[in-house]
Length: 115
Length: 115
DNA sequence: CAACTCTATTGCAAAATGCAAGTGACTGTA
DNA sequence: TACAGTCACTTGCATTTTGCAATAGAGTTG
Image (cartoon, rainbow over all chains, first blue to last red; front, side, top):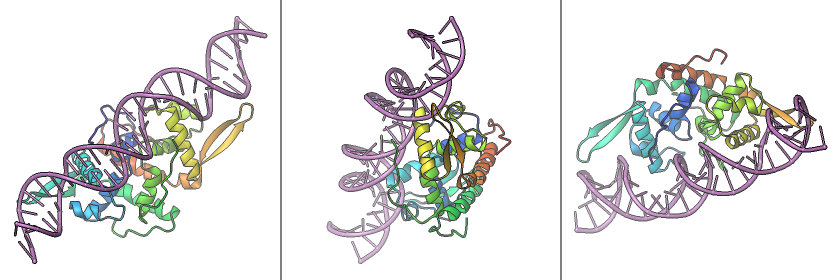
C-alpha cells in the first residue's frame, strides 16, 4: 500500500509540495495534528471517517517525509503518538488559506478557530 | 473517467476544499491558469507532463466546480480557452502558501515570480 | 477467562491514474 | 487536390490507489 514517487515531476515548489500533500486525506491528518490530536483513535474519530488502512499509510508517509515524528508514549503494549515536526507545522499557512477559501465558497462549513 | 463526490464528507472547510482540490494535478492546472495559460497545448506543455485524458478530466471538473469558465476563442474549428473565475482566482493565497513552503523545504525548486 | 481496547494489517472490489493510440475538424504546403 | 500537420480531445487498457470489511496481536478490565 505504501508508495513513493521515484523521480521529481518538476522543479516547481507547488509540484513538489503536492507530491507529498496532493490527495484527499494527508492534509486532513495534518489538520488534526494541528488541532492537537496525537493518537490513532483520535484521527479515526474525525468526522470524515478515514479508513484505518489509509490512516496507517498516511502516517507512514508523513513520517517518511519528515512532517511528523512518531514517539512511544507507553510500553506494553507499545503505543505511539504522532507529533508535527517544524516542517509539518510550516503547513499551517496552507491550512489557513484553505480554511479562508473554503469558508468563503462553501457557506455551510464551520469555523475552525485554532488553525 | 469523470466523477464526483456524491455526499459531503464533513462540514469542515478544509475537507470541502480538498474534495475539489485534493489530487496531484488540479492545483497545477490552476497554477498554470494563474500564470496566464489558457489553452490545452499550453497546459500540456508544462514540465510535469500531464496526460491528455487527465487534463481533459480536470478541466471539466474545474468547470463543474465553477473555478474556471470555458470560452470559444474561434469557430471553425471550435476552440476554447479556459479562464479562472473569481472563485478560482481566490485560490492564489493557497498557491502562494504552497510556494513558500515548497521553496523552504525543497531547496532545488525554483521561484515562480508571478503567483 | 471472556470481553474489550488500541493499533494496526490483510484481502478484495471499485475507482483513479498513466500511457499510447486514435479521431474529427480544420489549415497550410506541394 | 492530395497530404502532412495542428489542436483538442476521446478511447482502450494496464497499473496503481482507494475504500470497505474482517481479522490480528498485545495487552487491560471486569
